[in-house]
Image (cartoon, rainbow, N blue to C red; front, side, top):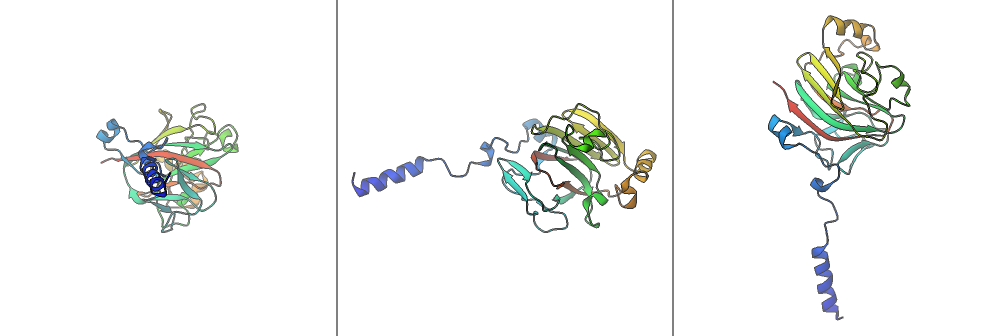
Length: 237
């Protein structure tokens, strides 16, 4: 084959070859907002390809150790909590998570950056391997709980390495946690019950805990490998 023919053939092969980077829409875990959800007002909070719209707590960029691959955001090494750049007041948040064996993480909401750490202000929906981690022995700190305050029932979370779907609904002072299509926690911020539980917990040392009317959504760096995907949100009136 002549050199000219070889060059022509190489150009044809290159033109017919798939792109080196798979389009986000074709990734196995590409962000999904179904037509029904879109009609309800849900929009993606994570684009599946990078951490645009996210940064570290009290940082200007995402912390080291958080990466995006296969349409998922994962915490691989230390670096700090990952939060949305935007603050939210009333919303319904939906996402999927899976945790490494023995792992611990969480999803914060209405977090304020006026404090040293996000958990000084933001309530947390616990993400956990209930079967192995010590926190799984107490329903107040098990998967789905409002960490250390409101217990989630046993037997709802899936094992480590399997995907769990959650919904967090925050509307005024009303809060609901849903795990795998089951409501596992319901409470009212500022109620007598809430106030008593906070006063009896470690959160009593932080006067601003649970007081913010709006704030950041956060994904917790608790030192373990964790994955999140299909993060989407709907604003509520």
